Length: 537
Ligand SMILES: [Ca+2]
Image (cartoon, rainbow, N blue to C red; front, side):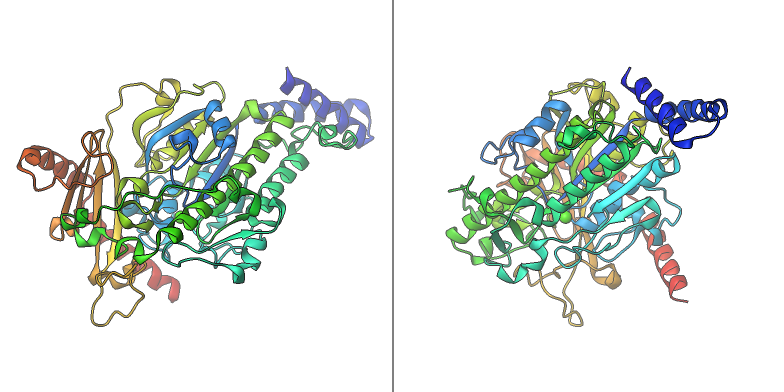
């Protein structure tokens, strides 16, 4: 079929270009063709990340947001409606997703750590593909990088994971001086520019350009003459193309036209009484909405939604390219965000808390030959991505990964599935010697957790099962929370101290504690300190 034809074409072109005796070249050509066909049978991977994108998408039940290409992606694969991150902060979440281990094993709980201090021999997901002969390419943010400070820089990248990397910069970075809005809610800008001037637009174009150059056999599809010297799959290498979009992360910047979709938006209901029964460590911003006006909140939400619609358009360009290059039937597509986001729910904004809108984020997996268009409501974890993608691709993953393959759910999204999700968030408490910036008006903890100050860092740990979320702060000594989504989908009522829920609290607390080992965590921290010291010697 198409693959065989591609191989034959390749053989003929190699023969013509070589200009040697036919028999020798043909024998070399046949040999390369067989090798190439074996490679071509391996599926490609298009690994698309978005920074801080919540599940506020039409494909995830929010029709207010204009995302036609997410809808298109949803029809091509499986929308995981209940996918939960292992930590709602970029550094720890991405390190967990990309290594396939929980944050306690990875040892990254803040924005400064690298997982290689705790697990130097870890083989990341892209690295495994690279070791298996794939061309692995990173464009933009896949491992952690500060945004917007490190746009255009590699940040905390893992160089050994990639064949090649690119760090584009666009006008969203160079025009930062024009930002308006409220810092706590997120500053924003409706930029008078086209998509191709934005960092994420440049990233999408770059990915398409690379795919065309390495994998095109249909040059005329792009309006030019057929590429006579373009070899189909000419490298013989399947690809793992990772495109990491920076939006909708703050500052919420998008070309003006995307703001036109949102003349007005709703803001969450104000219900300040809920904080009477919630632990103080659960609150990242106070007072409610940081004291911002309703208009400021609406402007921030409009800009966040506009940024999502802008990313949606870039994803559309990538899907168009896969179709035009005839790669779509042999490419696994994974769309993921590193965590969810608050847009005023509980009076909170952004991330680093353990409520549903932050612990949950979009995950869509499209795999050739698997189910399409049926959403999956089962609870899954983001560290399940690693064993899932490797199983679909037929690669041997490390046997000690913390996640589980979702392949059976990709075959049958309604399959009985009884696995909880665990999410954790570090808090570095304010002490007399700690003058770090404080989180959102909090007098309790700093803006970013820092394990450098281990004596004052505590964790919130949360378990999500079908009906409930149960959370303990500092092993429960600084508060517990229980939410019952059957009775209270907006998490206004903390049932943790309600006698009617005593058995549920006991059961979920037991499951939560069974998922981590404080002695192991201490050993991991000692390993990190040892390796950091070694690196300084
Ligand atoms: Ca993030």
